[in-house]
Length: 63
Image (cartoon, rainbow, N blue to C red; front, side, top):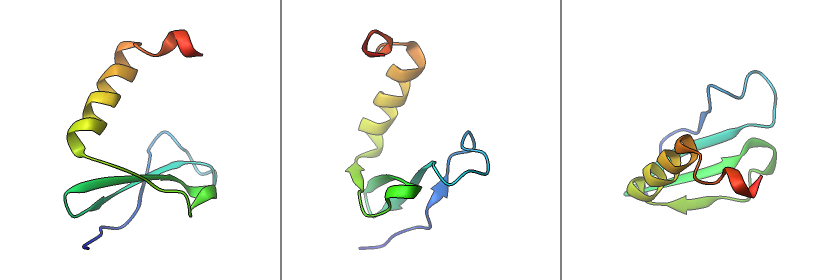
């Protein structure tokens, strides 16, 4: 499997607790930098749908 380097979210600042992403062939992987062994793998389409929903406030009632 071909991986790209982990990229930290620009919203994370300089702290060690941040969301990181990388490309893994046809998938996208996400992890928290302080829990590097736990990786969530999804498709770019599914991740894009999640991000659109988050931006639109679709999940705000869960807070």
